[in-house]
Image 1 (spheres, rainbow, N blue to C red):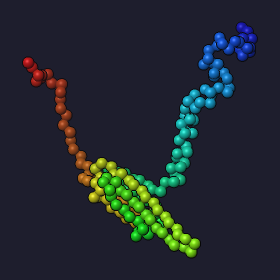
Image 2 (cartoon, helix red, strand yellow):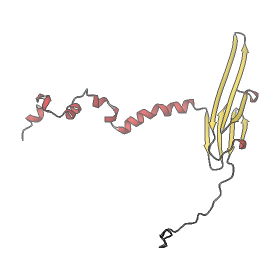
Image 3 (tube, rainbow, N blue to C red):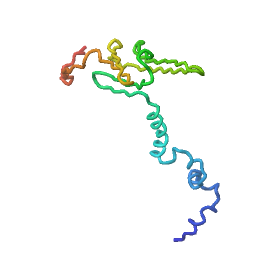
Image 4 (cartoon, rainbow, N blue to C red):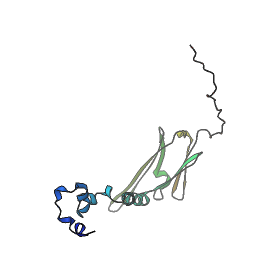
Length: 165
């Protein structure tokens, strides 16, 4: 068996070769630069890594959900209680903070607004708000606690037929 065809494969006529095979042999091919033809795991990690990084840096709230309540913790240490307003609008909790400080050379204004949508079963009337050491804690309680109930099994495999003509 000779290795000559393998060594001189680049000299064959390009028109007779398979175009897909030609594309993969070319190191500057668009297929090799296209992320869908690379390792998909590396592509997914590279695509989601910046999102995870930004989410950790700019996240100013923490969310905890269990069966009985939903808790939202907000960092509002630069605001006093009279500068923060919490209200419910429909099925939404809106937190707004505004402050203005007059200095010799002008004004410094700070403002933030956060909205949180309540899940089904958590009425806006059952929302509480607490401020402790610069942390605002919003707690929404479930309307009625989930109760355990037994569900009867209906047996449809019995031979009776109710649709007789």
